[in-house]
Length: 127
Image 1 (cartoon, rainbow, N blue to C red):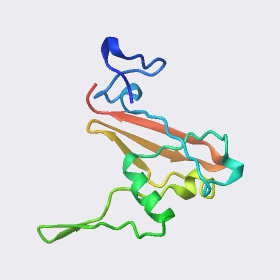
Image 2: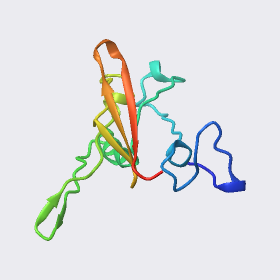
Image 3: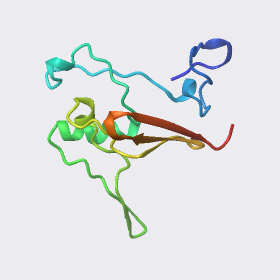
Image 4: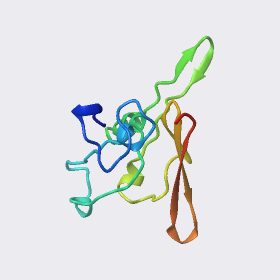
């Protein structure tokens, strides 16, 4: 996800590793295998998926319950990720969360409008 200085070219994205810009945080992924519907083979998605979403997604596909709730000093904290499989295969077109934290200084808000129009707003607090 983004080269640095003279050792990488992130064009047309701005920034590099450790930056809040897309050149430092955006990464590509692919899906393959028998569980992927044939209608999606070769398809492209602009879905926003956080790294923490892969664990609950793969666990659910494997038939496991993705709950590794941590008990820290008596307080229970659930996992951060959500199952994004319904969104990836087109069953549910909406993002699983309204705000996705990208880095420690940036977040993306997804706003869905009637008629299927979607806006993504990025908040950068340190630029």
